[in-house]
Image 1 (spheres, rainbow, N blue to C red):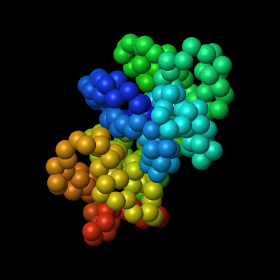
Image 2: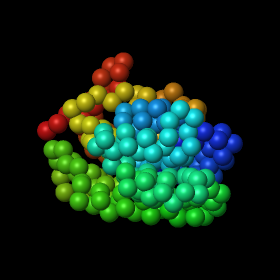
Image 3: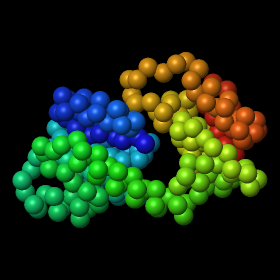
Image 4: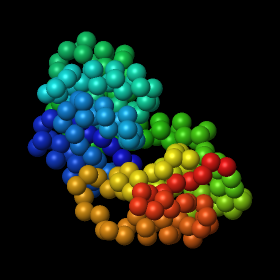
Length: 220
Protein backbone atom coordinates (compact mmCIF):
# COMPACT_ATOMS: atom_id res chain seq x y z
CA UNK A 1 0.00 0.00 0.00
CA UNK A 2 1.21 3.50 -0.84
CA UNK A 3 0.30 6.54 1.26
CA UNK A 4 0.83 10.22 0.49
CA UNK A 5 1.46 12.15 3.71
CA UNK A 6 0.75 15.88 3.48
CA UNK A 7 2.23 17.46 6.60
CA UNK A 8 4.31 20.60 7.15
CA UNK A 9 5.63 19.50 10.57
CA UNK A 10 8.80 17.80 9.34
CA UNK A 11 9.60 16.02 12.59
CA UNK A 12 6.09 14.57 12.76
CA UNK A 13 6.24 13.60 9.09
CA UNK A 14 9.58 11.83 9.54
CA UNK A 15 8.31 9.96 12.60
CA UNK A 16 5.17 8.84 10.75
CA UNK A 17 7.19 7.70 7.74
CA UNK A 18 9.41 5.51 9.91
CA UNK A 19 6.50 4.13 11.95
CA UNK A 20 4.42 3.26 8.89
CA UNK A 21 7.43 1.80 7.07
CA UNK A 22 7.76 -0.71 9.93
CA UNK A 23 4.23 -1.83 9.04
CA UNK A 24 5.24 -2.43 5.42
CA UNK A 25 3.57 0.75 4.16
CA UNK A 26 5.27 2.92 1.54
CA UNK A 27 4.95 6.60 2.49
CA UNK A 28 5.75 9.60 0.30
CA UNK A 29 5.74 13.05 1.88
CA UNK A 30 4.99 16.59 0.73
CA UNK A 31 4.61 19.64 2.93
CA UNK A 32 2.43 21.91 0.78
CA UNK A 33 -1.10 21.71 -0.53
CA UNK A 34 -0.31 22.50 -4.16
CA UNK A 35 2.33 19.76 -4.21
CA UNK A 36 -0.22 17.33 -2.81
CA UNK A 37 -2.79 18.18 -5.49
CA UNK A 38 -0.21 17.69 -8.25
CA UNK A 39 0.90 14.30 -6.90
CA UNK A 40 -2.63 12.98 -6.31
CA UNK A 41 -3.85 14.06 -9.75
CA UNK A 42 -0.76 12.69 -11.53
CA UNK A 43 -0.16 9.46 -9.58
CA UNK A 44 -3.02 8.75 -7.15
CA UNK A 45 -1.80 6.94 -4.03
CA UNK A 46 -3.89 4.36 -2.17
CA UNK A 47 -4.59 6.72 0.75
CA UNK A 48 -3.91 10.41 1.51
CA UNK A 49 -3.16 11.51 5.09
CA UNK A 50 -3.71 15.26 5.13
CA UNK A 51 -2.93 17.97 7.67
CA UNK A 52 -5.38 20.87 7.45
CA UNK A 53 -2.94 23.60 8.50
CA UNK A 54 -0.63 23.83 5.50
CA UNK A 55 1.65 26.80 4.72
CA UNK A 56 0.42 27.60 1.19
CA UNK A 57 -3.29 26.73 1.32
CA UNK A 58 -5.90 25.33 3.64
CA UNK A 59 -6.24 21.55 3.71
CA UNK A 60 -9.95 21.88 3.02
CA UNK A 61 -9.04 23.46 -0.31
CA UNK A 62 -6.79 20.50 -1.09
CA UNK A 63 -9.67 18.08 -0.51
CA UNK A 64 -11.95 20.19 -2.69
CA UNK A 65 -9.44 20.25 -5.58
CA UNK A 66 -8.88 16.48 -5.39
CA UNK A 67 -12.57 15.67 -5.44
CA UNK A 68 -13.26 18.15 -8.26
CA UNK A 69 -10.80 16.09 -10.32
CA UNK A 70 -13.05 13.04 -9.79
CA UNK A 71 -10.38 11.26 -7.75
CA UNK A 72 -11.87 8.95 -5.13
CA UNK A 73 -8.68 8.14 -3.21
CA UNK A 74 -9.55 7.88 0.53
CA UNK A 75 -8.47 10.94 2.54
CA UNK A 76 -7.74 10.84 6.26
CA UNK A 77 -7.56 14.28 7.88
CA UNK A 78 -5.05 14.99 10.63
CA UNK A 79 -6.03 18.14 12.50
CA UNK A 80 -5.00 20.12 15.55
CA UNK A 81 -8.06 22.34 15.17
CA UNK A 82 -10.66 22.20 17.91
CA UNK A 83 -13.48 23.43 15.69
CA UNK A 84 -16.14 20.84 14.99
CA UNK A 85 -17.16 22.95 11.99
CA UNK A 86 -13.77 22.43 10.33
CA UNK A 87 -13.99 18.68 10.76
CA UNK A 88 -17.55 18.53 9.47
CA UNK A 89 -16.60 20.72 6.51
CA UNK A 90 -13.77 18.35 5.64
CA UNK A 91 -16.05 15.33 5.72
CA UNK A 92 -18.74 17.15 3.77
CA UNK A 93 -16.42 18.06 0.88
CA UNK A 94 -15.00 14.58 0.52
CA UNK A 95 -12.72 13.43 3.34
CA UNK A 96 -13.33 9.87 4.55
CA UNK A 97 -12.16 10.12 8.17
CA UNK A 98 -10.32 12.39 10.59
CA UNK A 99 -7.98 12.07 13.54
CA UNK A 100 -7.28 14.83 16.03
CA UNK A 101 -3.74 15.75 17.06
CA UNK A 102 -2.12 14.57 19.24
CA UNK A 103 -2.90 10.96 18.35
CA UNK A 104 -1.39 7.56 19.01
CA UNK A 105 -0.03 5.23 16.34
CA UNK A 106 -2.29 2.23 17.11
CA UNK A 107 -5.35 4.39 16.43
CA UNK A 108 -3.88 5.79 13.21
CA UNK A 109 -3.00 2.29 12.03
CA UNK A 110 -6.50 1.08 12.86
CA UNK A 111 -8.05 3.88 10.79
CA UNK A 112 -5.70 3.13 7.89
CA UNK A 113 -6.76 -0.52 8.03
CA UNK A 114 -10.42 0.52 7.86
CA UNK A 115 -9.73 2.59 4.73
CA UNK A 116 -7.69 -0.25 3.25
CA UNK A 117 -10.56 -2.70 3.79
CA UNK A 118 -12.90 -0.22 2.14
CA UNK A 119 -10.59 -0.09 -0.89
CA UNK A 120 -10.43 -3.89 -1.03
CA UNK A 121 -14.20 -4.23 -0.75
CA UNK A 122 -14.72 -1.81 -3.62
CA UNK A 123 -12.03 -3.53 -5.64
CA UNK A 124 -13.71 -6.92 -5.35
CA UNK A 125 -16.08 -5.98 -8.17
CA UNK A 126 -13.36 -4.25 -10.21
CA UNK A 127 -11.14 -7.10 -11.39
CA UNK A 128 -9.04 -6.09 -14.39
CA UNK A 129 -9.23 -8.26 -17.51
CA UNK A 130 -6.97 -7.97 -20.54
CA UNK A 131 -6.92 -10.85 -23.00
CA UNK A 132 -6.39 -14.13 -21.12
CA UNK A 133 -5.12 -12.31 -18.01
CA UNK A 134 -7.37 -11.45 -15.07
CA UNK A 135 -5.99 -9.46 -12.15
CA UNK A 136 -8.05 -10.13 -9.04
CA UNK A 137 -7.61 -6.91 -7.09
CA UNK A 138 -9.12 -8.34 -3.91
CA UNK A 139 -6.73 -11.30 -3.61
CA UNK A 140 -3.57 -9.95 -5.32
CA UNK A 141 -3.63 -12.89 -7.71
CA UNK A 142 -3.46 -13.25 -11.45
CA UNK A 143 -5.37 -15.81 -13.47
CA UNK A 144 -4.07 -16.78 -16.90
CA UNK A 145 -6.40 -18.78 -19.12
CA UNK A 146 -8.19 -19.99 -16.02
CA UNK A 147 -5.03 -20.94 -14.09
CA UNK A 148 -4.23 -19.10 -10.86
CA UNK A 149 -0.71 -17.71 -10.45
CA UNK A 150 0.48 -16.13 -7.20
CA UNK A 151 2.33 -12.82 -7.33
CA UNK A 152 4.66 -11.14 -4.88
CA UNK A 153 3.62 -7.74 -3.54
CA UNK A 154 6.02 -5.95 -5.89
CA UNK A 155 4.91 -7.98 -8.90
CA UNK A 156 1.28 -7.30 -8.08
CA UNK A 157 1.80 -3.53 -7.75
CA UNK A 158 3.65 -3.36 -11.07
CA UNK A 159 1.14 -5.47 -12.96
CA UNK A 160 -1.80 -3.57 -11.48
CA UNK A 161 -0.31 -0.24 -12.56
CA UNK A 162 0.38 -1.50 -16.08
CA UNK A 163 -3.05 -3.10 -16.55
CA UNK A 164 -4.92 -0.12 -15.10
CA UNK A 165 -3.12 2.05 -17.66
CA UNK A 166 -3.30 -0.35 -20.61
CA UNK A 167 -2.40 1.38 -23.85
CA UNK A 168 -0.38 4.08 -22.06
CA UNK A 169 3.38 3.96 -21.50
CA UNK A 170 4.45 3.87 -17.87
CA UNK A 171 7.85 5.43 -17.25
CA UNK A 172 10.51 3.82 -15.08
CA UNK A 173 10.09 6.57 -12.49
CA UNK A 174 6.35 6.03 -12.24
CA UNK A 175 6.69 2.26 -11.88
CA UNK A 176 9.47 2.56 -9.32
CA UNK A 177 7.32 4.98 -7.31
CA UNK A 178 4.84 2.12 -6.83
CA UNK A 179 7.54 0.10 -5.08
CA UNK A 180 9.64 2.62 -3.17
CA UNK A 181 9.11 5.84 -1.26
CA UNK A 182 10.75 8.99 -2.59
CA UNK A 183 14.41 9.25 -1.69
CA UNK A 184 14.71 5.52 -0.96
CA UNK A 185 17.69 3.97 -2.70
CA UNK A 186 16.66 1.76 -5.60
CA UNK A 187 18.91 -0.88 -7.15
CA UNK A 188 19.58 0.03 -10.77
CA UNK A 189 18.12 -3.21 -12.12
CA UNK A 190 15.40 -3.83 -9.53
CA UNK A 191 12.56 -2.91 -11.88
CA UNK A 192 13.92 -5.11 -14.67
CA UNK A 193 14.17 -8.05 -12.28
CA UNK A 194 10.51 -7.70 -11.25
CA UNK A 195 9.42 -7.35 -14.89
CA UNK A 196 11.46 -10.45 -15.78
CA UNK A 197 9.73 -12.47 -13.05
CA UNK A 198 6.32 -11.23 -14.20
CA UNK A 199 7.04 -12.24 -17.79
CA UNK A 200 8.04 -15.73 -16.68
CA UNK A 201 4.67 -16.09 -14.94
CA UNK A 202 2.45 -14.33 -17.47
CA UNK A 203 4.21 -14.65 -20.81
CA UNK A 204 6.97 -12.75 -22.54
CA UNK A 205 4.73 -10.79 -24.90
CA UNK A 206 2.21 -9.43 -22.38
CA UNK A 207 4.42 -6.59 -21.07
CA UNK A 208 6.03 -4.53 -23.84
CA UNK A 209 9.35 -2.71 -23.39
CA UNK A 210 9.49 0.85 -24.75
CA UNK A 211 13.23 1.37 -25.03
CA UNK A 212 14.57 4.32 -23.11
CA UNK A 213 11.15 5.14 -21.66
CA UNK A 214 9.48 2.32 -19.75
CA UNK A 215 6.86 -0.38 -20.22
CA UNK A 216 3.28 -0.82 -21.36
CA UNK A 217 0.50 -3.38 -21.70
CA UNK A 218 -1.57 -3.27 -24.87
CA UNK A 219 -5.33 -3.06 -24.76
CA UNK A 220 -6.82 -6.27 -26.17
